[in-house]
Length: 356
Image (cartoon, rainbow, N blue to C red; front, side, top):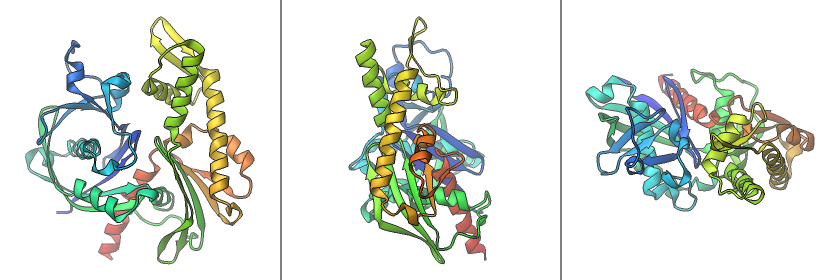
């Protein structure tokens, strides 16, 4: 029996997961059950599941609903140096596997066998980090999810450089077959705007696969979290409030389509922060243009500049198109999920290759 295929993109701000049943996205923050001990709860909390790893005493709520709680209540997995050896990262990985596995009867009745494809930022793509992530993932798990035991055995793990995920998403169809044939000898520049980092890479498509141009690479810690922090500072300066970064992030994400942004302190105190957010998005987008131009000095040789990552849906794309005119700019259809879609499609393509 073929193992199930899971794809994981464990971002600093958002976790993206995919299997054959679909895609799941949730903040990369956990809510310790102890934080709710003083609150009255009637039944299951909305958009949250309760997890407990067999080797740990602590229980954590995790899911899309965690952003309803304050920054002080949440355990954040945002981190840079040494992130892949930290307990927070390992815990998030285990919960992610359990979140996907809980939909499979085999995980409850026996042991669900799984193959995993995951990614690392190119600046972190070292043998030391690759081994650390493989050691974290490749094992057997017992995780209680809403008091139901979930058994998982990860048997095979492949770690890809993160931007490759976006290219596989663009170039492969939903079954793992190549859908764009005219890609050989093309040079792609990828701007992956995540929550904690901005990854700028150039990738050349060759007959035998992809090759990174390491002379055109930048990894910056100026991810979308920097934008949210500046908005918080402006709210504090203008209105004298100690705003919550998680509330700001949620408000920006919810308001981006209508271009209307509000900060809700309570039902009686709602601040219109549209002007502040617009100004800061403009500033952040301008900084991104400068970062791209300084990192990619050969843009006239680039066939496509691909914008991806959760922050790509927030930036002022028109500003980038007006100021970067010497190459084609391409926005992925679902930038936040593009990498994890690509990881999954890559896994499918490797299975197809083994069948040939």
